[in-house]
Image (tube, rainbow, N blue to C red; front, side, top):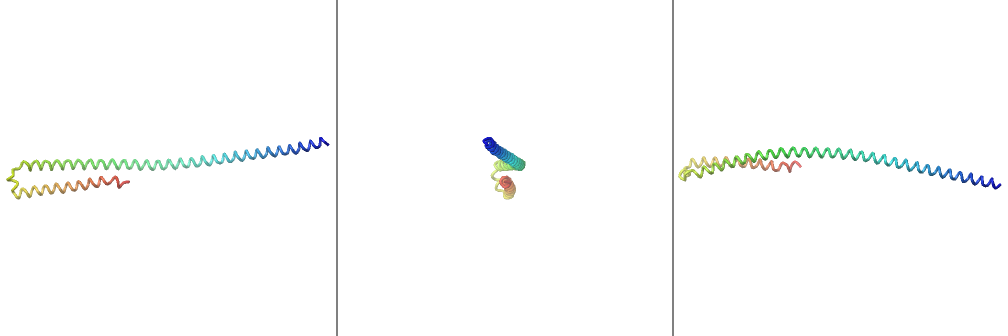
Length: 145
């Protein structure tokens, strides 16, 4: 009888151990599968984020390159206008030097005075046109942003 009891206890204990082992194995499988699923999801999301970042970086880089090109073109235009203004100023300086050399009596001649005034007005008009062009070019980079 005692053997029978021990045998029953052993069987019950053995069933409990098998159940526990089965429970632990299922738990390990569940944790492992969850960990694998999480890692797969995490890796997939990281790849998506990397792809989005690369696309955005490429977009920003293209915009930066475009702005560099526009800035270089505007700088060339500004330099060209500066050269024209310099030539214009040299012309005015020559005109003023010429006026200083003219005798005072010639300055009283109305016809010569009108010619000088006309030339000065033409130079002044040209200077205003150049100034307006320079102002437009100076404002252009801030409008491009």
